[in-house]
Amino acid sequence: MSSAKTDEWYERALAQRPEGRAFIDGAYVETATGRTYDTITPLSGLRLAAVADGDGEDIDRAVRAARRAHDRGQWADAHPRDRKRVLHRFTDLLLEHQDELALLITTDMGKPISDARREIESSARELRFFAESVDKVYGDVAPTTPYALGMVTREPAGVVGAITPWNFPVMMPVYKLGPALAAGNAVVLKPAEQSALAAVRLAALASEAGLPNGVLNVVPGGPAAGEHLARHLDVDVLTFTGSTEVGKRLLVYSGESNMKPVWLECGGKSPNIVLADAPDLDVAARAAAEGIFHGAGEVCNAGSRLLVEDAVFDEVVGKVVEESAHWQPRDALDPTSRMGPLVDQCQLDRVMSFVEEGRASGVRLETGGRRTLEETGGYYLEPTIFSDVDNASRLAQEEIFGPVLSVVRLSSAQEAVELGNATVYGLAAAVWTSDVTRAFTIARQLKAGTVYVNCYDKGDNSLPFGGYKQSGIGADRSLHAMDKYTNLKTLWVDLNQHPRA
Image 1 (cartoon, rainbow, N blue to C red):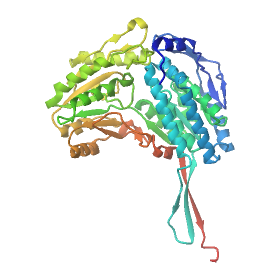
Image 2: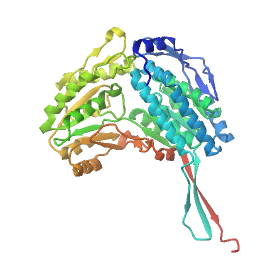
Image 3: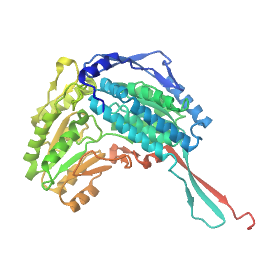
Image 4: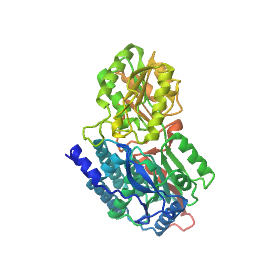
């Protein structure tokens, strides 16, 4: 891990000159209109860089480049060992440029520098997993009579449109790029306008690794660029991580265009259930605090609803409040910082509106609820905990996407399941109990794509990550992710028409 101190990170931040142009067909290019927008660093509220403001014409240019690259077959038809070699080299370059990419993440969207460096490490592991998968995913031979041959082959879908959020500026693109590129597709990536700089840099590193021109294109821009990509008739698959509201719109755009498959990883209001027989309440409280305050709560599977059985309710709430003291916001360029600012003024205002709504409703505010470090000009908010929240209230139902925890009181394990499932979302959940039978029973009853037992937010590249209900369609991570970016082709060969030997 880098041993750089805060002042050294500031020196690097002042010296960086981020590239903000689009990357199309193997080169940085200006947008068709020449328009740019200023990206603002949430650390101070000051201008960081000018970023290309791509529109439909730029998306068209990127899709044409991707289609040409795919149809040429230089990547789609390459030997698996060659695709594998390039993806391994791409992974190596991520790690070689770890500090550069981490600094882009921190200054662009506010993630603490140590967390940003860990994001690069996690992204490298993810990309390495798919590099290794290239020559390990096979087709099938179906059981038939001796007079026929039935085969199933996987073929790359073609041109993949990817739209990614601002909270993980490298990891979320890698979640899409890893399986899509491993399967042989070409990609047009539209990163969130709040944190596009790291994605733009990724494209150049992929090119340096040997990815053929046009196979990966990155077009920064606003919602209009994303809509144009989603409606594009020459995009074969669309993949998205972001809000449920936008995910629903993308489904409409697909239906109104070419019915391209749309894979969605959307919002969550994940229940973190602590029962009275939890094996260690101190551990559960630490995990609960980290589950909501890590990443300033700007995490799709954040444990934003803490459901606690009545017998230990006051004790658990007290312990989580104590733990929140370790998550007070600090300068994001300080390597010891655990929580930085929210991504921008708009997000801060949105989160504060929920805080004020909670105050006005009379629900108990245990701690936090105020802006802090205002003298920096940044968008910092204290860790905030409301207790005895009504599970039907907006505090417990809406995805706030900030460091705001809603604690709900439970009367029983059965009520835990009922309230845990009483949401339109189903991304993640957790249950803390010493009874293994109860753990399995509750886990099976919870309508969530991932259920953690006596932990929170754990996982591995080999396991899928996706949601139930309005948390999405399909899964990222694991070999299952490759299903989204391939088409199955059945080949039937009739051998009966030829004389037997």
